[in-house]
Amino acid sequence: MKKYLVLENGTVFTGEAFGADRDVIAEIVFTTSMVGYVEALTDTSYKGQAICQTFPLGGNYGVCLEDAENEGEGASALIVRECAEVPSNFRSELSLDAFMKQKGIVGLKGIDTRALTKILREEGTMNGAIVSDPASVDMDALKAYTIVNPVAALSVKEPVLVNPDGQYKIALIDFGRKNSIAKDLAERDCQVHILPADTSADAILELAPDGIVLSAGPGNPENNTAAIETIRALMDKKIPTMGINLGHQILALANGFAVEKLHYGHRGASQPVRNLAAGHLHITSQNHSYAVKNESIDPAIAAPYFVNVNDNSNEGLIYLDTPAFSVQFQPQYANGPTDTSYLYDQFMDFVKSAK
Image (cartoon, rainbow, N blue to C red; front, side, top):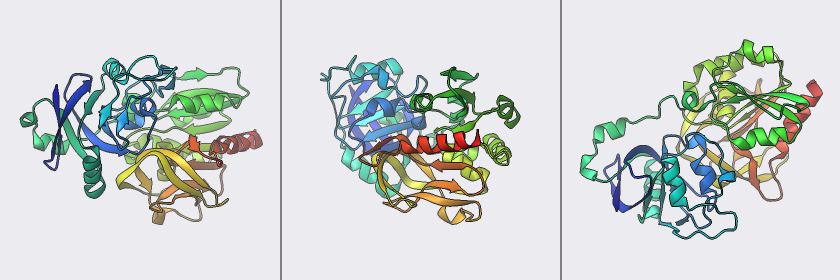
């Protein structure tokens, strides 16, 4: 069945439908990852977005449900040049098409994804509608589309406890967490208390955590005003704190720094960042539209920790008078000999020293 992608600049692509059979409006973004479509589609940071794969083939190794990052809502749509109908992998439980039907994720295949990526690189991220009838698209409504309150929609509603026998009590503030964050903390003997994004500073202090982790999540960090005020109130307590992705940006805003929206964001598993202290280069997994503005960082409060090698945007901060640091990328997914999972160990060093 024919399906169309209508961009807000008026460009129309004609392709074929797969996945969920419905129309959808979303923010169109691209990722350079060659693998990891299951993780991407279940990544809450993609809420309200349609992912265009620059790698031409999707679904070739099928779907292993264990790889899903979250049980909740993730990406709205996936756009690929070609979708494999017969997956080949010993772990595969179902095809990508069947998985997307189950999750309600719209698919579009058969379009020129290189041309679409070029438009997004040159003109920036934009809204688009994936529809059965391009004439039905209200262009004013398409241009006005925004992702509304994604953190509130995705965060847990009640506290969740992971690994209750852990020695170290960690408060994981859920802005749209990845399951792997709690798993990595649990593997380090942590009792992980996953808390709603709107949890107050008093409630967090009442828990008496040994450390605080601010999770990844979707949307504009500036919209999380209550969380920013909560983190600001906690900074004076000098509780060891680690921010990841959206958590990195919220921690920066809580300290008076500013953020900016990138032209087309960083999405993919091959984003190069440099550790400014050690000089190491890491190839990281990222998914974000916003970055902390370099010129807004107060050198009396924090120092740049990581920088993006491609565009020199900030990728991490280390705070000077409190045991806190944050990174823009996913520590558990960096590749190569300089694996960034050591950042969890660095956080645990802070926790153990404070305890």
